[in-house]
Amino acid sequence: MEHVVVVGASAAGLAAADSLRRNGYHGELTIVGAEPHHPYDRPPLSKQVLRGEWEPEKIAFRKSETLGAQWVLGAQATALDTGARVVTLEDDRTLPYDGLVIATGVAPRPLPHAQGLEGVHLLRTVDDALALRAGLREAGTVVVVGAGFLGTEIAAAATGFDCRVTLIDPLPVPLAGPFGKQLGELVAGLHTRHGVRVRCGNGVRGLTHAGGRVTGVTLDRGDTEPADLVLVAIGAAPNTGWLHESGVPLGDGVLCDAFCRAAPGVVAAGDVARWEHPELGSIRIEHRMNATEQGAAAAACLLGADTPFAPVPFFWTDQYDVKIQVHGHPCPEAELHVVRGEPESGSFAAVYEKDGRVAAALTWGLPKAGPRLRKLVIARAPLREALVTE
Image (tube, rainbow, N blue to C red; front, side, top):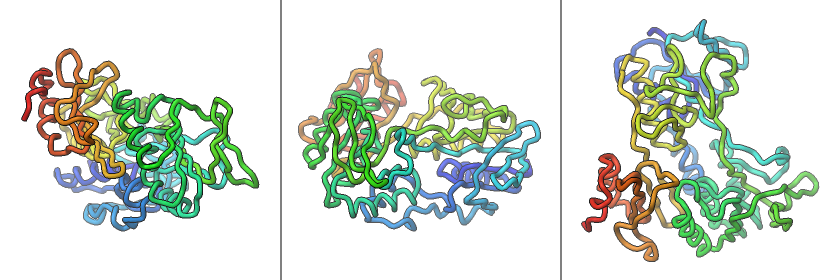
């Protein structure tokens, strides 16, 4: 290859570019980013940056300066021709390629009819985080719509401002999808103890507003939560609009094989990629560590590697003084077993068991237990091994 184009100045895109260089690719390298910024770390946006503890300079990836790449920032990719091997940008520039990495990530889903209302926020970029931080400093009542990872982290951060915080979600408990009901109830209790009004089991019918500014969130049962700031965290959609009619297969992301390959000379990585995991099947993972690992794996595929990408997922969330870490991929049918400590103590470890074996593991305020449990997840060890007291 003489020219590789990476579309997505993201953690996944940067990891792919870095992996190419480290593994002997010396050709032309162009990195395209929709934002005007060089790649940066996104997890701190809902934590340290939002709380005002860190400024944006601290989350910038320094590797950006050592790649010998041509950076095309503040530019959207609008089309891809896989036959001619050309990427088209919004200003009609074209970038020919021998190898292409798609790492365009996801975009947050807005609430219907909320666009344009002052006081309604989404969080994906560093600019979003700074705007939300400024809004929280002035807000009296805050409603967070969506009690997934992002929503619960933002609710936790918002309690550090002088405002009243309400968390809303149609599911019965926060983080019910990834964690299940039992742990979701613990998350709800954690927020309640810190003064958040947790109103799960409530969908949103719409927003009230006056003079172009949001004033409240109307729930599906008819009552309205007052709000002069609303944060919407109801999931995200893969950024694949520019790939329609490209020949790249799409369906809740860029569809890839087990090697992250989507088409001849084209690979995908990070939040936008749905690939065939050898053990977990078709999967798309929106977590920071996966972006880095998959970026490197996608680059290796471009360079001729034939090893399937089969990671054991790892993700975490920091809320108040609690760090929750998960190894593996908890599935709805798995049964939870506490193997160390007690949930009531605020420090424990648990495993998710499926068919008598350890499918995933979770630590709550007990990160040192993670490495041992991760080994059990990798080995798909029998449950009895997890129940052995250290």
